[in-house]
Length: 98
Length: 98
Image (cartoon, rainbow over all chains, first blue to last red):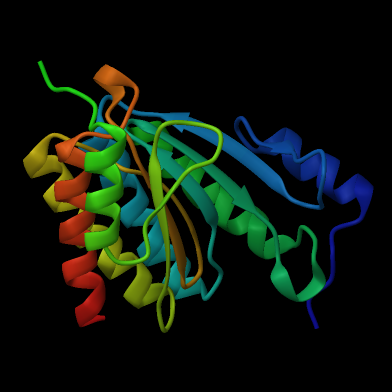
């Protein structure tokens, strides 16, 4: 059974990620991204969607035009786990290419 | 210059759409959809994305796993116009096929 990250582990992981922060009201992390336009934003989302499906671990996300806000949390434990960190790292890696 | 729908026009259009309602806090319409799983939800979003790009009229939307909530409004006039109705109609037409 997957477990929540401890407070220390999570703080360490957040420092190694790019632009992610803890969500105030719930046990989750989020990042906002901005692209040149909708085409680029949705292209990015498509890459994340394929990765998410492969991991069987899906984001919560909001998009309007060139902006994407992503929230990650692991449903089974209602908190942040290594799965979220792995997906966040993937997001960071392709966001850098944008 | 595109114009907001009048209250009467909008009420008429909403009756002809499927599951759309006015948003309380702002001049927009929204619909929530549920699919079998993430694959189906994101496939639907991809079809809407291509249509939106073709129309140069984009949705605001939120997705988590098999759920999609879409808000439509026309930025230039900060309200609901025929463009929103056209995109809503397209969404309804492909949602029926899901």
